[in-house]
Image 1 (cartoon, rainbow, N blue to C red):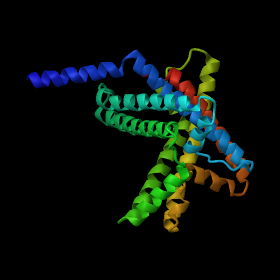
Image 2 (image 1 turned 45 degrees about the vertical axis):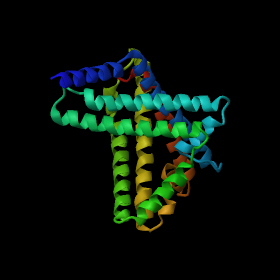
Image 3 (image 1 turned 90 degrees about the horizontal axis):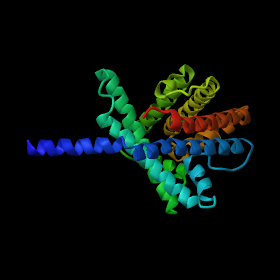
Image 4 (image 1 turned 135 degrees about the horizontal axis):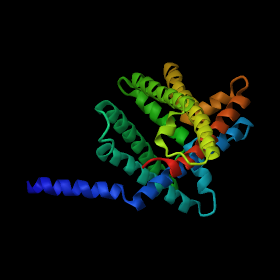
Length: 274
């Protein structure tokens, strides 16, 4: 009984900490950081569309931040904010959604777990760049794909990864078209501001969905062609778009959409329910 009480006390302390104002503010800042990254990726994608050689992915965006005055401070702040948001999402897996039906609760907890891991990985990437050890995201993805390809059932695993990423992309696009993301928000009182947030979300989610779908498709195609070295994540997917007919216009639209998603994430930091 004593051990049980101590465990309950520890759990209550963790729950209180996860709901503390300072922690929640830090976690909200994680959405802002994610938004800034997406804005930078969108800008790089548009520059890429017009022929400027850039790395249009997370690594490229972090490289842009690192090149700014006090860039390393910005990167460490980004790492801290993303770590806070990742831990908050994981705390929701344990303490959140208790009043929902079991099926809905499970879906919410799985989603929170996935987002938590994404933001923790993002925090590690920020810290790596801040410490001067950041790596080219495309090369890292390519190297990982090559190693997986060599493993038993490696090709099947890569195709499965591609399918999962593509499906997530479809989910993003559908969520955008249905504007179901607004259920997560306490929308502002201003009708004009509500419309702006909704439009940014709709366009942003659809663009993000298209980008993820293309990344998943690239995994599948390069695996089937036994060319895992060409699977370079978002950067490779966007560069593949540039090579298509009307690629300049398509990539510009995707880049503009990612910028919208970035501004939506920044707005989300203010209006999301936490």
